[in-house]
Image (cartoon, rainbow, N blue to C red; front, side, top):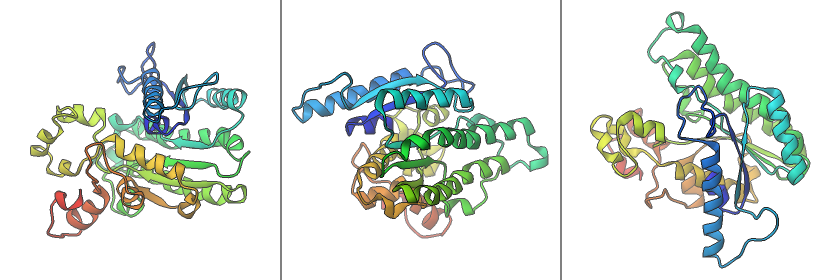
Length: 299
């Protein structure tokens, strides 16, 4: 998401806990905010070269800035927003994508058998972080009309009507929908928009590692998990964020639950390989709905 915004020319503050000096509890030390910021800047520079434009100014557009931030710590989030205000004087888009709780999930386990500490930690990581960040960031965002908040979660409202087989996980991934719904109401008088957004079956680095494949060999995982055939790369949701940010009529989506596949159809963009996977429709119509079709019918 950050890289696609950089490719579109945005100045992106990349935040999180994993830096080149310190890894978060998630335990993936090679995925740092510094590297992400560098990828943002590289994408911005490539886009400028392709367009035949030079840079300019102290910080050219299409630039990534890494700021170590624990979004559970109010003082750190306050300092982050104060820095953005001091350096830019504005905030146009907040992508509230904070999680890190996959390792804590216990599927197919009754609530009374769950590890309670892990369940409550999920609430902290996937709910408290979103509220804390909005609390401090939105006063800057509403300073100018047209601000956009994207609450990133797992599953649309409709998909999540089916129980996610772990109570704390289910609750955590449904709350961002209500946050977006509530923020849509609160931002309306300021000309702001809030939505929730989910990827489909995401080929994140962590998911590729789980299946023992790479982005180049991801189809090898289909033998283990047939539904992985509908998987999408992170580029798709990145382009969804980019399309929403660029849409002057994005307020029509405010308060709604959206998916990357849905927005790919709406805004006519594709994944990195040129396909247009729509995992949300595939799972609704084929996996749960019993339609006689294959994943290729949804790409």
